[in-house]
Image (cartoon, rainbow, N blue to C red; front, side, top):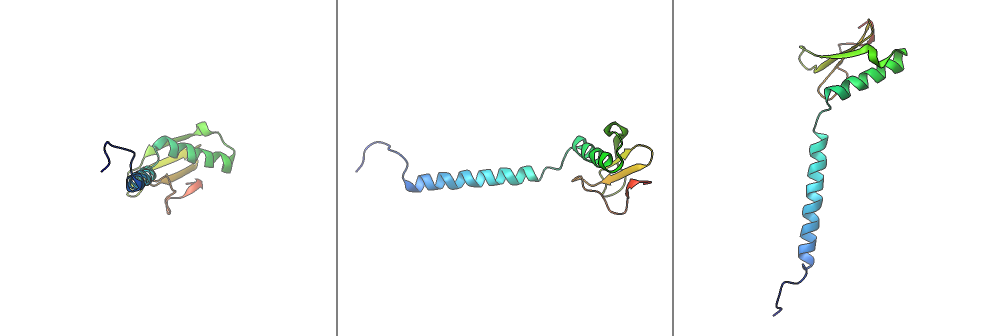
Amino acid sequence: MKAGGGAMGPLGVGLTGLVTVGAAFGLWLGLRAVPPGETEMIEAAAARYVSETGGSRTDCAGRPATIAGVRLVVTCGADWAVALDRWGRPVDGFGAGPGT
């Protein structure tokens, strides 16, 4: 019989590696499940507005929506708006771009 506590055997090393990989994968999935913040959503819509119209990012503002399925409405300038869902994607049927 061996005396004392030596290094982990191959089974312990493999199990530790498996647990570490599982924890890292779970963390990665958890971080992907977090929707973007309102600031990120407004910034993305403002960037789209600038690329489409040449306007200024400071022309844009966001407000919470009261429409089911819409988290935020971003308006830019006098006639550009986009409705966004909880993941920051444009919502179909609510328009985007000039005149909306």
